[in-house]
Image (cartoon, rainbow, N blue to C red; front, side):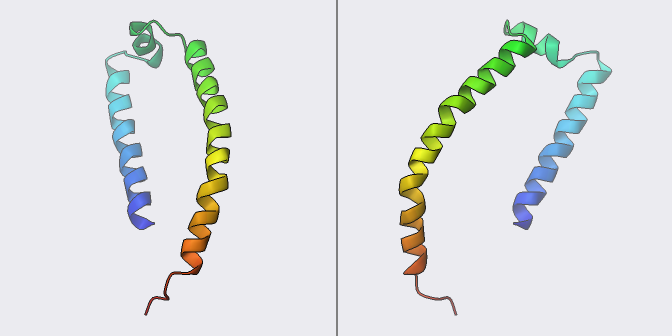
Amino acid sequence: MYQFLATIFKIAMISLIVGAGLSFIDVDAADILGLVNLTPMDLWVYVNLAIDWAMPNMILGAFIVVPVWLVIYLFKPPRA
């Protein structure tokens, strides 16, 4: 768990440094999105469409994965 949190912290710090550097040279998110012909609203719509597609598939998959994981976990020999 510690390694995961450390990785998240490192990513956050690098993102902050890169964002500050881009802000210093007057580049913002709208400029970068404009290079690929997107607006912030278009990006928001695409993110919502992705979530709407992914959630039912994740729930469907969990109906199989979670019980299999639970059976494997219950029948695993105890650790010393």
